[in-house]
Length: 276
Image (cartoon, rainbow, N blue to C red):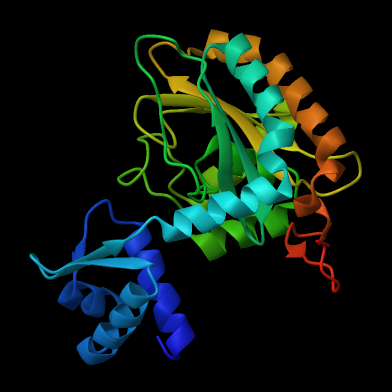
């Protein structure tokens, strides 16, 4: 990594993927940055409140400042306020976890959820993480809205999620991903079983106005033992209806006040989209 900004962001991204704190030497090794440079950057990040230095152990971890910034931004865009009532309704109807992800550049980021399960097994993932396009229900739903060439380019750029790191049924080759995308396109929504995570099944639909690129994806997910194929197919009409409603009201949020290229990438407006 070259450049102070690139190295700083690299440290923040690395720490964000860790549930526990990390030693300075480990950070330097994984990012291929000299220890002295990592020490200076961590000192600045600690001083600014983005990182906590656990002096008793000599390691570092993220503070909640980045989370706070992200949540503040989402609250100002109105995404959650607009989407949450519809997400809640779908979760209640399906009895399973419902999640909203939005297109952000060349990735999907989960930004809102509602838990429909009242008892028994519950799937409670972390928000703010990026969906692996090749094996997540939301990713396949988004990819199915693109041309085959653009969809595969996205997958190649992000990388294929291997069965060892995701679910045992995760597509392991580009051909398998192509087949999954084709099935999703023909069906009108994605169906994944033990694909993104072992023991997890999900259905997903793109949020898309007719004739325009998708702006996000909506999914319903639950334990495979309970959220069977029969239940997924039964929940699909409500999923598609809710996704259509979200697409229809998307213009109410300034977050979606951008143009999306033919390959699904976001092009922000030249002028600020917010006005105080």
